[in-house]
Length: 141
Image 1 (tube, one colour):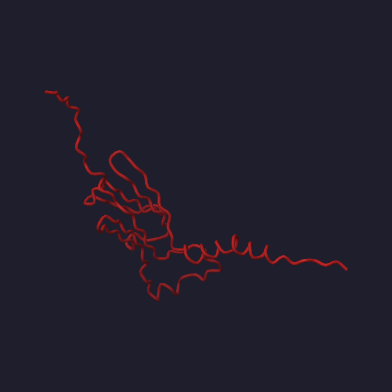
Image 2 (cartoon, one colour):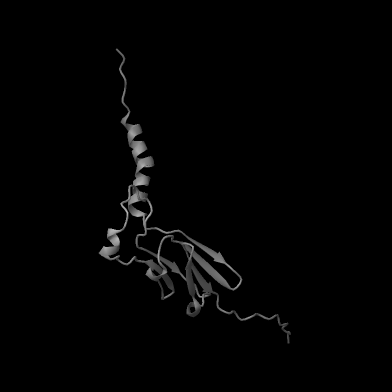
């Protein structure tokens, strides 16, 4: 007869480092939307990946140097819900989300523009006009 040791430590390590992060992501990050920020010569461009949504359900607001981007889907009527097909598996959805971005003094907040196309929310953040620094020789007296 051979005695076999059962190592419960391996199970615990697997649960902590492999399964727990997946469960955390599924439970807490389902409404997280990724964003890219590009810098151009005269503006910044904030691109938020949010496919399958309606542009009317987005809201943008600037308050005390914070840009808040939010999405909240409107409730559909019960008549429209009766024609919705029954899903066997549904992995992507359009849950509500909120993201905030801190704007610095270089952004002209009065002229921010946005458009929604091809599943991307494109936000133009124009830079403020900067005063040109001229090189001026100074004479020593």
